[in-house]
Length: 483
Image: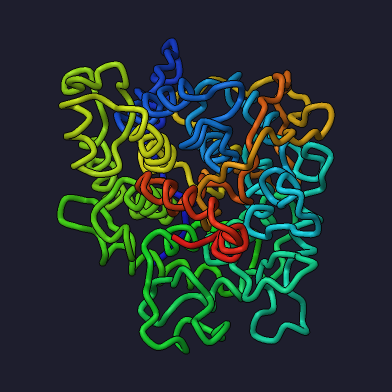
């Protein structure tokens, strides 16, 4: 299968048609804009709902405080659709002002830790939002990400994004989502090192799918095929395919072939109704997995399959005709059919609203169908023109001042939200930074990572209870990427 997204159509004109063409050319020219696809309209409705959930420049987590991982997912979604530009700019400014709240444990009073996956996601998001990744809130995210990539002395772990810590915290928790964001972010902000691409490719099994975690209980395994019984994951594969397509565009070797095999595997996983399921607790058909897979299918030129995925997503979207008790939330996308039924019957309550935010941010990517490698570069269908240029980074880099006892959100999840730029960053929109909300510190990566955007609220409650017990902070740190 060819992954070429650039086709040339050559036409030879017979001499006998010259007069007809000349006559047509003499007629007055009327340019009619092509109507936006129905899926693009549905994506904008979803993004508009999500923008309405933003408060003080951030999307809230399950406990009400800003969730920077989820906010990044929202920025990616708004960038993909061109919706609510001022809201996206304000959110970008707030994330830039809280870089260390997201990719370190500084807010917990624990210094010397930098989360590799969160840093890679920040790098990608800054570029896709049109900001300068080398000066985002005063941080050079590209340099930080490169410094966290394992070097030649790491053996088969060479090229892996890792976390930096001053203490021995056990095996690194980075995964295929983190590695995909690393490749995407580096490709969009300059050259992408071949080592980072090679490590990502090693997470692909011969069947074509990618595993989520490079590590086993015995430690890092050299490749997917060398891990007995490796679980292949739709979400991880969709992310990897898109990252490899971006790397292939930058000339990385082996990337296009691996993306080819990955998308073939994805097609084989698609359900008869067009939907997808993930792995582990997300095995059932859900909008998160369907959104990412549909986006990857579109990026790979598999448009028929991508259209089927979009159809499955539209079924889960609240509309004016079947919103029921949730009519005020038209545009939002349910995580699954059960969630939709409950909302139509009883509305979206405060507990389930967190799941709807996470589901919508990722699901709408399968409706917009702008590849992760092109968000911020390609104008969304029927989107407004470019916004004024400037710098998206706000003045200052203040982190939130912790208030009271730390209330954690979910452990950092491996991460679409949650966006990036090429060798030369795209023009940056002018951002008026709003006042930073007072935030309760969250673990790096927050709860907004793409693979767990539809996670049940029970997870967060259990984590909160764990934090009450002595020594449970260490448990949180060591399991920050558990799905």
